[in-house]
Image (cartoon, rainbow, N blue to C red; front, side):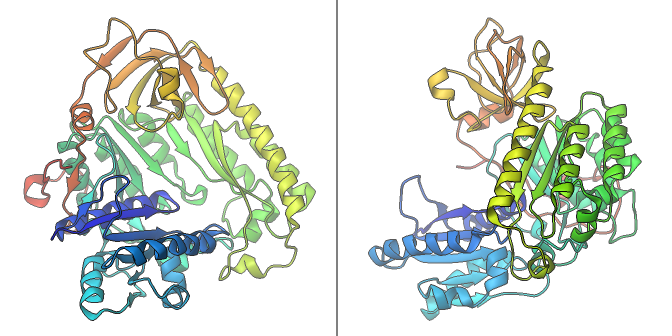
Length: 494
């Protein structure tokens, strides 16, 4: 009897990509994805430990699943990800109806652990302290027909005092360039038009094999992949950001002029307390160089408000950097105390009301700047990769949504004589921006062009790429000589 699965993902892009790997393994083991609304035989919770309410969210979900499991004999519940790595066996102590707990270093063990738990009729907990199998060697069932994540490294060598990720993901491990490019080739062979290179600190890529310019070389190599139209990456670290990466972005046509550069704070005193090994002027100088090379670049950031010991003067310095940086948007966070991080034990933990008030001032300032920057886009011609699920009001407005090359979200009207049959997610359209809001753009005129793509064909058919794991040998750059021998594109499937 075929068993069904569903995966619930919490947290960052890294977790989203890990969930694709988990889905690929389960399908290789004979499971099928549960239809929407159906009760799955196996429910996997892929957790995040970064946010303050992560524990509450996990155990709230497990409480709901307990009732469902009581109604469905044989149902299994698995918990993985960063919170599983942190809490280990405590999860089955607090929720004894959980069948499997696995960590960030052994996501490849899930099918075996499920089978073992079913056979032994008891919970299986397996948490490794170091990476067992690099995730890229595992199969992946991709979420999107037109855009794919490609992990270039795992782990982190930084020691930011607010972050628990290094202790849960381990030290940085870099994939070989040939492996990365082979996976990109496999995705493009499946119709994917856009890849996002993924790592905790993508621009420190190469540290493991001693090439500090490896990331810039990797971006240039992606430019030689036929059929790859857009390359993005997330997230770099300002301390490791070098001029050769800026040159590679500017000189490689398919690398998008979009940069997510985490600031965290504009106060040098707070940056030092955070162990962020750069200062505000160094950060701003990077943005100046990026804009000199790519005047159209859209730059986004992360900012934490209310770090322990932050004074009003420190916060005002953050506001000043935000004014000077002119971010197109920002992910703003209120500091949350995470047990196990050095910052959790620092003096000067701020009252919630102080943090909230500063947070609201920051958001108001950034919204004003975002709106001003977006108004500068009105009247411009933009190329969009049509997306699915980006516009919550698309059904009622009769619009569709897509991402411009600079990453901005654009809601557009799919009308005009240039349309070839119908516009689908995964197609490429061009249009003119007619209206700007702080967090999106609108283009209500007729489309200027429409190109149907294989990604659009796959999206229309409900097909998603599946790629086998990739593992090559020694580091090298350039496209793999014979990718057919190193990767297997297994075709799209439901």
